[in-house]
Each structure stands twice: as C-alpha cells, then as structure tokens.
Amino acid sequence: MTESHAFGRILDHAGRADPYPLYAELRKTPVAPQEDGSYVVSTYHEIVALLHDPRISSDRRNLDDRFDAREFGAPGQEPAFIALDPPEHDRLRGLAMRHFGPPDAPDRLERLRPELGAIVTGLIDALAGQHRADLVEAVAYPFPVAVICRLLGVPPGDEPRFHVWSTEIVDSVGPGENDMASRQSHRERAATALNGYLAGLAEARRGAPGDDLLSGLLTRDRDGACMSPAEVVSTATLLLIAGHETTVNLIANGVLTLLRHPALLERLRREPGLVVGVVEELLRYEPPVHFPATRVALDDITIGEVTIPRGAPIVLALAAGNRDPDYVQAPERFDPCREANQHLGFGGGLHYCFGAPLARLETQIALGELARRLRKPRLVADPPPYRPSSSLRGPRHLLVDFDGIGP
Image 1 (spheres, rainbow, N blue to C red):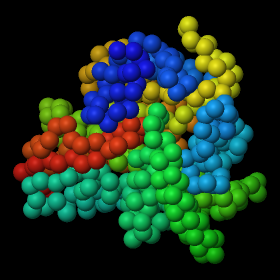
Image 2 (cartoon, rainbow, N blue to C red; image 1 turned 60 degrees about the vertical axis):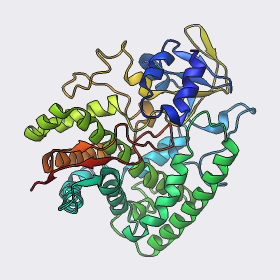
Image 3 (cartoon, rainbow, N blue to C red; image 1 turned 90 degrees about the horizontal axis):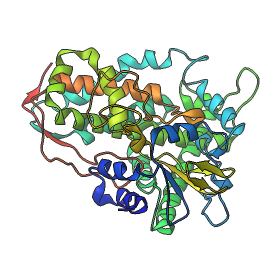
Image 4 (cartoon, rainbow, N blue to C red; image 1 turned 30 degrees about the vertical axis):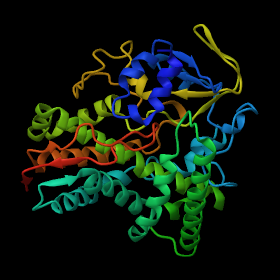
C-alpha cells in the first residue's frame, strides 16, 4: 500500500473505527505527497518542527492559485484567528484570551468548577431508573454545550438551532474532500445562518452587556484596542463550535477507551486523582482532532528527501504523530501514568488550542463522575458508529448498558 492510498483509506468513513494501522503505514514516509498536490506529514518530530516553523502559514489565502483558498466560514465573513498569521492572529487571540484566562481573568475557569460539577451531576441523575443509555446524547454532548452557552452568553434554549448548523459545518470539514463543491455549499449555508444568529446576539449584548465572553469581546482592552463587529462574530463562531464539538469527542472517546479497559475503569473509580493522567493519555491515544486546519508553505521546505513547494497545502496528521514509536514507547498501550507525555492532542506552536484548559477540566469532571457513579457499565456495540468527519473523530452514539446509578 502506498502512503497516498493509506491516507485515502484514513479519510474513507469505512476506516473511521480504527485508523491507527493506516497511520502506521503512513508514517513509513514522514512527508507523503498526495495526488491533489497536498503533503501529509505524519511523524511526531516533523510535525512539531512544522508547528513552530515561521515558514508555515494558517492563512489559506497563501495557497497557490490552483488550490481552493476559501475559508470554512460564511462567504465574506472575517477569518477567525485560527485561520490567520501574526500579527493579526496575535492581536485577535490576545483580545479574546483576556476574558478567558490570565492575566485579566486568571480564576475564571476555577470559579466554574462547582457549576461544571453540578451540570454533570444533573445529567447523570437523569439516568436513574435506566439500564441503557447513549452516553453521547446523555452526557458527552449536552455537558460541553451547556458550558459554552454559559460562557458565551448564548441562551440554552437556542441550542437546537445552533446544533444543526454546527453539526453540518463540522461534518463537512476534513482534508481530501472528493465532493468539495457540495460540502462547501452545505458548509457555507450553515455558516451563514450561524453567523447571522451570532451577529444578532452580539448586537443585543452591545445594548445590554452581561457577564459573558460575548459581551467581553465587544469591549475595549486597557489600551483601547477592540475587535470590529465582524471580528466579534468570527471569534464567537470559533469559540461556539470549537468550544463544544471537540470536547464532545474527547469525552466520548474517553468513555469508550475506559470501557475497553475495565481494570483501569475500576482503578479510576477507586483512585479519582488518576483522572488527570487518564485525560492526558487520552489526548495522545484517542485525540478528538486528527487533522487541524490545513497549513500552507510560505517557501520551499525540504524535509528529508521531500521538498514541499511554496503555496502547497500541508496536512499535519496529529493522531499519527501521537503514536509515533520514535516519540513514545509502546504507543499502542493506554497508560495514564506515562511520563513526559508531550502529546499533540491540542496541537502546538502559536495555534495551541485556545480552549485546552477548559476541555481538560470538563473531561476530567465528566469521566471522573461517570466512572464513580455508573454501576458495571458495558458497551452494547464495539466499535460504535462514528461521526462523518475524519478531522474531528469521535463516536456519533455510544450505547452503554449498566446496572444502575450510584450516589
């Protein structure tokens, strides 16, 4: 099998349940040219080097003219900072971060901990009297959605509206899209609707600000800098989608992994503090993001015997790098006590995941409580059905039988 064919099979939904043997095949060529002109990088050290290489751009407008440079948002929408390079990336990310963590709001997430625990407790309480549940629908999805709604100031009752748009956007995102035109059309339609919804919400907050991130994005910082209205909407769109879609996958992948390792699940029940290591290893072993947004070469870049030409798209296969035996011993073993776990679960470099602290905290709370309270949980089907996206990989449903709910 050639590396090009291996990558094609990774993108094929038929291989979604277990792409890792294909990643091993892909790693035989650290930089694999594809028929569409892109280059897939699949080994850990090469990925890390590129994540920190100033010759790599996140702005699709730097693509060669033969590639589609359209953004994944609504037509005419300002790019979110995840799709920009310095200095614009740094300006927008800094304006968003001041309401999310240090230095302006250093304890915002820690103050949320009791509320996060209460949300999870309520979701698990709702399973009382049942002996089978879809833990994606029951916990993994509603928990991060409730949290991001609370943080952004999105009315919880509007969740069904943005759920449809968000799902359509995420399910259509991925490298190597054969039906690019159709996917782009669906994605742009959903993004336009979501863009309009958040623009209306931002306008309402402008007249009546609250204690939420959306209101904060509308204000000036201590130096008088602020986002434009279009930048507020693009940033809010990014935070709304990324703030729950990836965490849904991380929690669902975590439940699935623990159920496949029953001795570890029992140990976690007895040793709650183990959940920190469980989540870090999960980010290496079953990460929610397999391919981040496509990067672009700003210059000819030679890696080994392969030269990536200027303007070519670069796909960083983070999930393949996470299991590179040149980076980690026994990569196929799930080990929550693994030392020096410098995984790629949140990417790296200047685009390191903005919401990593929140995703960690949410997943630790969710997995810890599920391990503690579910009595003798068992998978109904293994593997479960997976979502369409190859980039954001996780179970669509996760049916679990259990003997009851503990206190």
